[in-house]
Length: 93
Image (cartoon, rainbow, N blue to C red; front, side):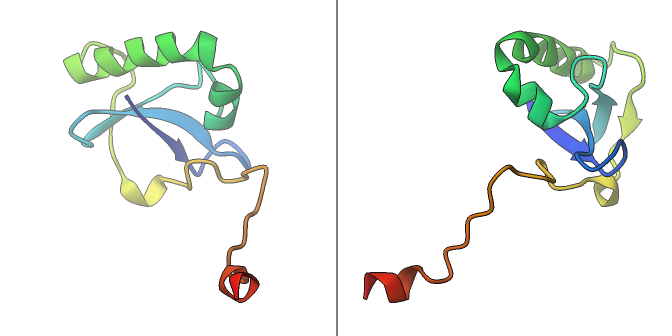
């Protein structure tokens, strides 16, 4: 299963499922608005997202669109933690 975030839908983007060949996508906002929300509720969302992924690859779901790579946001645009490893080497020394 391939998941991505589009730049639309607010600060956290909007969740889409991307086809195996990376050529098509389908909105998954009916399952979960964002990737972060899907991860937070993974037990319930994963089976539904996987089913949508399979439908997309068969070409049997509605709202299939061509992938536009410029429309993608970072997968988790607002991660809960910022980790900076720039001072790691001096710390080890």
